[in-house]
Image 1 (cartoon, rainbow, N blue to C red):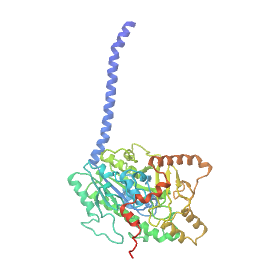
Image 2: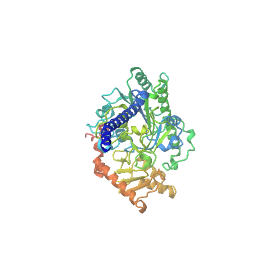
Image 3: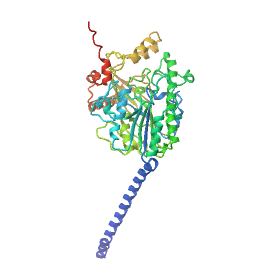
Image 4: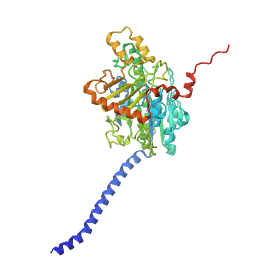
Length: 489
């Protein structure tokens, strides 16, 4: 009987192996089919997907209706209902030029060389037009540029989306932006996709667009002081005007039946020019609103608290386009986040500010910062100096005779300690410095270590890098910086 049993085992063993192999084969086939189905859903919904990235100019995201602010944004609200709203998006610097360099290159400012205002990247740096050069994509930048040199940014350039101040834009064939419409229309005929960056001038000052009347009584935030009331109303009107620009682009997509084939992303850039926003590394200065819509791919009405950065946009768009992401980028694709496959992206976001090169700067005041899940750590590299640029000097003059509390708030903006720590959940405008309080010592140590590691990885030596900032400005700006030649006698 034992002998017969052993024979049966020997006979059954190959059968069991065959059955196991069959099960494994079926499992692998199922996985491949599911993976193929995911890819096919993108291909069928979008074929070769188009990409549109719309960028505001100097807009504090918390002022948008979409994020609970007073500025009406019906088109952005509608777009958010079809896609995903980001609550934790950050840029690498709180001013236009380094922000835009980072957006198009996927690199942080010191690594690219574009860290002061009016900056230029190193000649060997590549940007998204290079990365999509081997694809069928038409890569266009329409509107505000503020990037250099041209060899690093070989976009096809349009100018119409950056409207002149105080001027009504005439309609051509029913559109304010006929070049954009013609580009979209050509894509429907040729089948070639486009990657289009639309960069507005709004709501950058001076505030001349839109109707400020509805915002005359809008409550001021900790960014504004009483003397800002009229300007704040005009600024909110410009946000609504920008929202109308977004609405026109969405109307074009609808008319040409391109919405399902197009990933649309709208971002607000850095904070507004009011205190504690632009030019600073406080939360409202380096945080950005971001909405992404891609019908059939992104879950409608979804929201995320995942940390993403502007440096992540290039690798994300390359993933969408099916193009290779070059090695060495600081950003990482968050396509899987858009698809709902993951819920988190980065542990930290990093930013920096260089005041040398800002118009009217009187003293260096470099800043470095890191933010995690709840707390923001800030390091001021020249705390012995006063933060002295036009917005700070105006604040000093306008609040000279104000009450004690107003003066205290103004002083926090003008003169800062070497290190700061803020709870961005309770204190999004960074008004209460927690640094040095014993209960936050562990948080401080963790964030300090993260920031120092980032600076090391970036080759950022801090104060020396700041003092070399003028060397990294664009050639046209360097020419302006030179003193006029002495008159001949």
